[in-house]
Structure formats: C-alpha cells, structure tokens
Picture 1 (cartoon, one colour):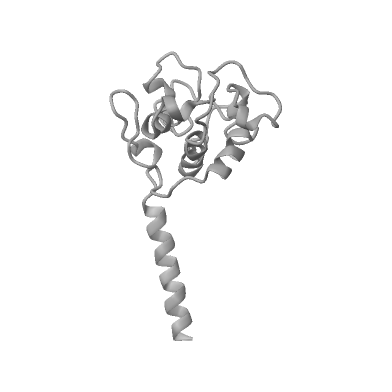
Picture 2: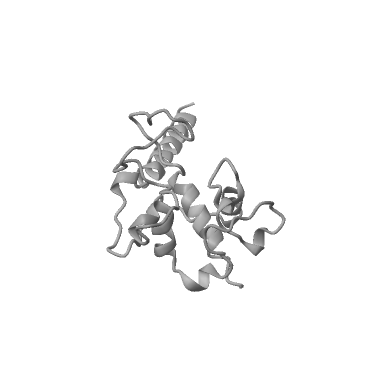
Length: 159
C-alpha cells in the first residue's frame, strides 16, 4: 500500500513539473522580429497531431486561409494566406512559433489571428458572437497545439 502511495505521489509530481514548463501567453518572449525562441511547453511537437489541428475547422482552422499540398485530401484550402508548401525551407521554428503566437509582431498588417495571445486587444469578442470576451480570455490554441502545428509545418519541405 505504501509503495502504491509513493508511486502515485511520484506520478503527480512528474505531471506537475511538466505543467510548470508551459509558458503563459502573457509571458511569451518575442524578439524584435517576432521570433519566439523558447518552446511554449518544453515538449516536442507531434507532426501528426499538428496536421489534425491545422486541418480542424474547430481547432486551428489554418486551411481556411492557407493551402497545403500535403493535406490535399482535406477540402476547402484557402487563398487568403500564402501557400505553405516548402514553408520549412523558408522559415525556422522560432519564426513559425512567433507567427502562430502573434503574427502582428512580424507582419503588422496581418489578418492572421494571434493564436496564443490573451491581452492587449482593442476589443476582443467571444468567439464569433457580438458579446464581449470573458474576463479570463483563453488563447485560441494551447501551447502544445502550437508546438504540434510547428512540428507539422517543419515537415513541409517540398514545393
């Protein structure tokens, strides 16, 4: 019994230490060019999960604006943002992380959403409603989801 309690305590402590490494949206450090050099979670991204989030209409919904040949089986690729084929040969991870966190830091006139930002908005709304955002505004994507999308984007080396 004592051994089981010690194991459970060890597992709980390990889970807590993993959570402690997550950088909160307001604590993200961006370079003057918009790069985010530090992982948001300290956990490597999963490219397969990143592709799912990228294509998910209820997740990142990245396909609404970007076309990607690697996801040709998915319908409705957008034309608002650039085609992302070969993106891993043009951008490094810190720059991609910065674009996902807050594209306005690199491209001030961008219409790309800030996927990991919770403050500094002129007038945030609650999803796609006309109601104001709640006081505890959450980012569009979680830190690990962003790391997963970056892992997927880094597989896109072909044009």
